[in-house]
Length: 92
Image (tube, rainbow, N blue to C red; front, side, top):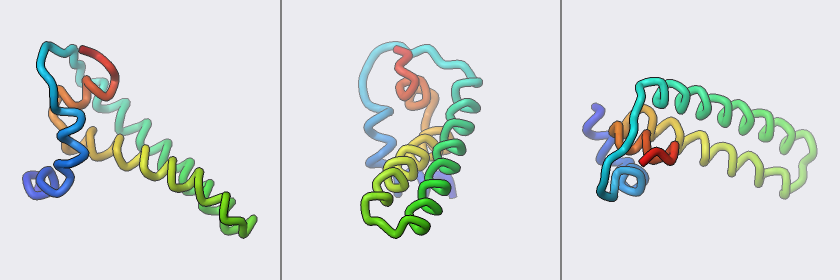
């Protein structure tokens, strides 16, 4: 199942797994990335509630941004290689 999901999300994963050179990776980076992704999902949920409450079209922008950032964090953390996780933190 993981291999199938990696193939489905390969356009996102390829951005972070590309490149040459060494990288610095710690297992805590992956754990923190999962937590940050969960926080962005929480922010997107709060933004969604606010968007429904205000009934304004502009209120959907924060929901979309937070949801996309949370999704990328979770995809890289759960399906990406060690290099992808290190690259998202900017550790080369």
